[in-house]
Length: 404
Length: 223
Image (cartoon, rainbow over all chains, first blue to last red; front, side):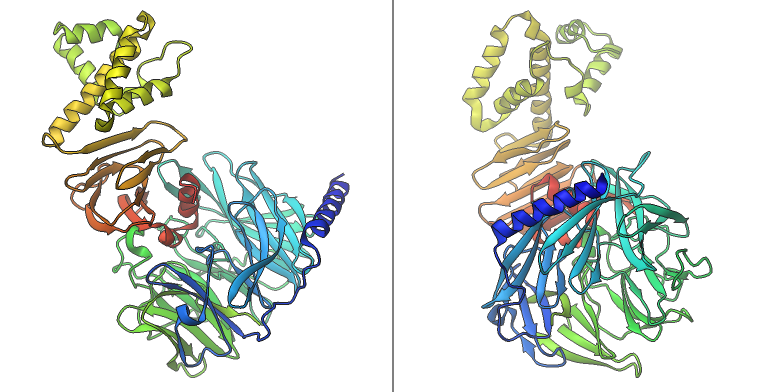
């Protein structure tokens, strides 16, 4: 029954798209395809997408050379992949594919996603297939959508995952991992009250599901900390290393799970295993860092970069987003050593601001005293140098990523 | 102690005992004032409230007279609502006298709805007050006192001094220029480390908030 319903839906969707979308080509129209995409916000609030072939040097004036982003405020919604910008529209549930054409971000194909308007976590199934997962607040269901981004066809499912219960009235799905033909997701539950505050339950839940059936195979819990991951359209929080081991960060700080008594920590799930590694727990809050952290990026050879807040500089959520207080640390996942990178303090609560290319780590930093630069960090030598410079009107470098 | 029509009449006649007087005054000045009287069957409480609030707005002085008059002309089943209306007006008057000098242009809005925003269009700004929130704006001094969450959209650059009345009085005051055409959100926020924080930000900076809080505000203010 489920299968036949799904097939019917698929057929209807196909017909709809053939009628309304026509034959959209899956090639960005701009003849020159630059390697990198950079998303900036100016001091006047305007936002721009700029493309470049190198982040190593030069100067950017976003207003002069960038495509102004309209509608704005989509920087935490984007999935950038092979020349295109994808996003789920929060108001309409419409998933769109856009490209920069003649210096304008242009929507060229869409597919309607039902039941959830916030992609809480995404994962690439293959080069052209994308998995979105989100919580359907109205119907209290966990939904997924598998989208072929070439044809823009979607297959949607309800996942067999525990929904909020008892005092909990919301949840966050923080990571997803494909392993041995199964899908593993991590999540936590929240209590939201009407006075604009929330807390996160003290437990990390990890479910192993059959794929693509989305049926529950195994349920795991861990209470060493909480709030695994976050929305990975905002910032990266999990990765798989060269050995196939999977790591994710749990971020209960005030800008994440808002249960700051719990520590920020990194968990591991070993290759081919569908259990949380009970022997591994990298407690960031109790390391030399002594603070909560949020973003986590793998840089290779067992090393990663973590972006951490500085508690004595900000006072609360009222200024967390605007005061420069973020540090970057190079961390060793095996020895659990931490090394602070000698960078100016960065501002912006969540940014997609670290990119690893050919062994070089590019880090976008917004400093009010030392300017706006992409810095080049070499994990082998520890060297740090300034790369691409942004003009003085730049307030935030919100995303840097590989476009082509 | 139950607040009955008889007790309110007794209060106005000055015949209450000290305990009864205290009970009436506690009820009068408590946050739950609006929830303590019952509207007559078949009558809509919101419409009665709207009439009352419209009447309080100094820009609608004529309307106030008309509304009050029409209430008293109605039959006796309206009496409890009318009595409550008088008390609410009394409450606002006392509140205004207590905090403001005569002649200041003070706007007081209270949104008792559990779900719907209350929108007000003034000459220099529009505001949208979220459910279970209240705000008082002194147009002469530029002081804003609020509790809950509010969106302000200035029609011209305006300097405001904003404080969250349900937050810490001294620490939460903030003076800033709100720029024409931008949307600003002010809210009282609590977290485990700070249970009385005031956040003021321009709509574009909402993205700097945790995803859960951001979504709540975007849904509430239709962003």
